[in-house]
Amino acid sequence: MSATFLHGAAAGARSRRQAAGAALLFGCLLASTTGCNTPSANHEMQQVSPPVHGRQHAEPVRLRIPAIGVNAPIGPLQVDNRVLPPPKDYQKTGWWRDGPEPGEPGPAVIIGHLDTARGPAVFFRLSELRTHDAIFVEKADGTTAVFTTQRIERHRKDRFPTQAVYGPTSDPQLRLITCSGSYDHQAHRYRDNLIAYAVQAHPKD
Image (cartoon, rainbow, N blue to C red; front, top):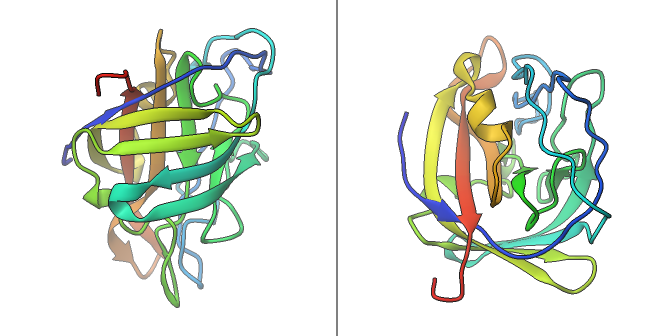
């Protein structure tokens, strides 16, 4: 495992359908076109569900990370047969819709592809994030949730830190996830996941 750092920001409250104790799987495999989109080697979320919040505020619509050149749309993702699939478009990101919105208490989770057979995808440079790098999540109501980098970790897929990624937090936080590590040609997937952790940014940050 390697490490680096993140902080998160701003506003929002809403109700969210939460299945208490539901298992959540995050799929991040490379298919024949590469990327992170097949459902094998997913990560099960056991007895972990984010806190239920108030009324819906505004869903995230765009992710900007100037330090690594990310400026991409965000679309909602939902668990399908116990799997949270990444976006179909390799240049877009996806937000776990049944979790917290970016900016409300709890860990908002956004995932994206590492690469494709033709080249880099949206999170190709995620490993380049450094402590205090700014992350901006634009929302449908025109507000922006601002985060700063706290740390980055790499974990083997069979040792995915479910509690650290999806477990409830008292403050607004953000998780960005993609594939990482060496490529297993026999299994057609990367062996690891890269996870960027962020916490709420404050005006002084």
